[in-house]
Length: 443
Image (cartoon, rainbow, N blue to C red; front, side, top):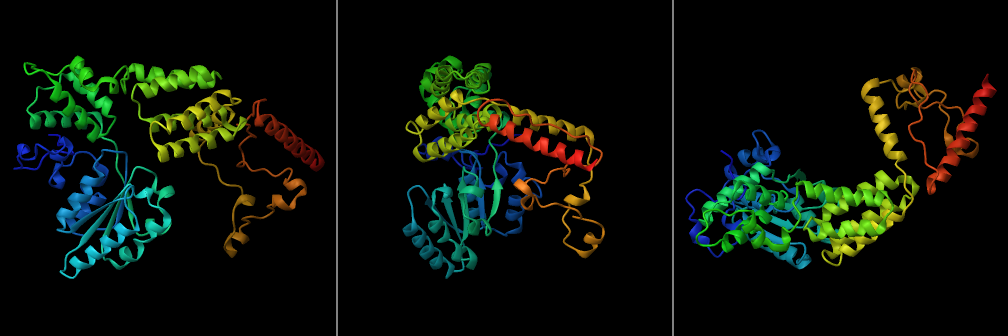
């Protein structure tokens, strides 16, 4: 039987918490109730081992919204009978960190542990993150940070070195549907029709909290005589949030395709139209940002390398501003991508070389390209006759072969005659001429 990430604890009375949000009422009371995250909670997996061994460790929980980061932190605190202190990196600062330290020291004197949970830890600056280091190092408290952003970029290396990073995944459709059933039981509401439940799961896009808020809203507006909540009732309850935009449905992918092809076809007006349609349909703006970054690499590439940077800057700016202000930066990126010179040369070259490697097998690295850190390797010829390009005329060692032995000369990358790739093509032509001249001189 599938159990919900937010299932209520055995013996708990849902009616005892009627004033709490549905997501809070369905939050699990122990580890066995958690659904999903089997890569962390399955037998022999890191967090399961931590629970069973009694060895609580500092960690970063990285995953999208509504997948149980806070839930897991609370469950660990309960399992180890520790004090639980929550700090919001959006609202808090060094003052809150100092208060947490004082509270941890107070209970440490009583022989009790403390867990300091920092929500949105990526929003703390370097000095604020550094404030945790001596206390994590001394073991005063266990640090658990939650983030929706890649900790490699957003959490400083000193804190990362003292905490394990655990990646949480979005809930899949089966898990979300099980959650709908459980929520219906707790609310004592009419059940959702299979079609309405699937649409709810698609709307939630892996976010359990978003799903439960939608279930709560739909159940509250269901007519008293209703025996089931169908798609029409669902649309009335959620309004524009669900209007015209079905995540995972045909129209969803049609609109994405229209945006991508409008950018590729250099039509900024159509691209803006489809971009606005996606926003109007309620798509996750971060998803649009990821798609734009992909377009910058696939369809513009080295014809204008600024495109990738503009998309990354737009995504970062959106994270700072949020909606609706941040959406303008993405609109700017959409227009830039549409008017930029186009090239899929790198994309095509990448696919071609991947296809070759799959069928060609693993060829040995030529000896002159190998490093020789030991005397034995030097004696075996590693690095012999290697020519350091920076010491050569023009910074180019003409005639040096870099492909494996026995593999015919390949030309995966062929720049197009547009944008910066026009200049890149001219440079490659000249380098190939120098290689040919060197080869002729050796014959």
